[in-house]
Amino acid sequence: MTERFRSAAHCEPFTVRVPNAVGQSRSRTNPPNPVHVHLPHNACSVNSILSRYTYSNISLIKYWYDLRVDQSVLNDPRITAVGLLVEAHAGLSARFTAQFEQHGLSPVEFEVLTRLVRSPDNRLRMTDLAAQTSLSTSGVTRVVDRMERDGLLTRRACPADRRSSFAVATDSGCKRLDAVLPGHLRIIEEWFTGQLDPESLARLLDGLRRVRDAVHPGATAGATDPEPAPDSR
Image 1 (tube, rainbow, N blue to C red):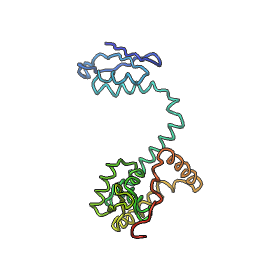
Image 2 (image 1 turned 135 degrees about the horizontal axis):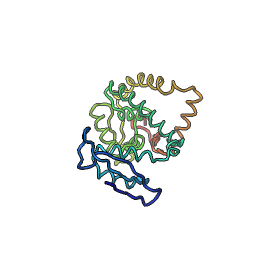
Image 3 (image 1 turned 90 degrees about the horizontal axis):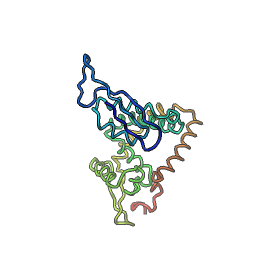
Image 4 (image 1 turned 30 degrees about the horizontal axis):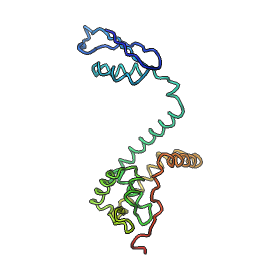
């Protein structure tokens, strides 16, 4: 059995031998006849191919299809740079998460507390908090609701805008953050900053800040409080 799938662009398709096609049983003593599948270079056609075969074949088809990827493209330093960033983030995040959980916090709850305590009067508008944490409006509301129930923060109305409100870290929230930070800093020193000399770290921070400002300008939203807190007037 042979099937040909053509691509509207790119190069000619090629053939791989895929055993155990639909309707054939797997047997060591009586192996099924292989199916010749012509895979195009265009990835848009791959889904139509995979839908015709059993799951046991899909990994083989994908494997052979992947062999057709131009390796020089995969070795592009831009792909390497992003890959290293993602891998480093994954390794650090796993260590951070385990330590946060020891103190009853999730990673996003730690980030919320950190951003609140670093802000004037330990507070941020809900919209600014959402922008800084890359959460949707509903997402930040759910997180704040949960943290408010746990006594880590509270809401306060915004006198200048009745439609807006502040999320404010409570004393309990500040104490929780104080308890987490020593261990968090040890992990950062051991697995991140301690791996770099001061000059390399300074260059890395400068580069990361430039990228952050380009791709996530909302990360510093509300960093300067536009109005004094009610109890400071």
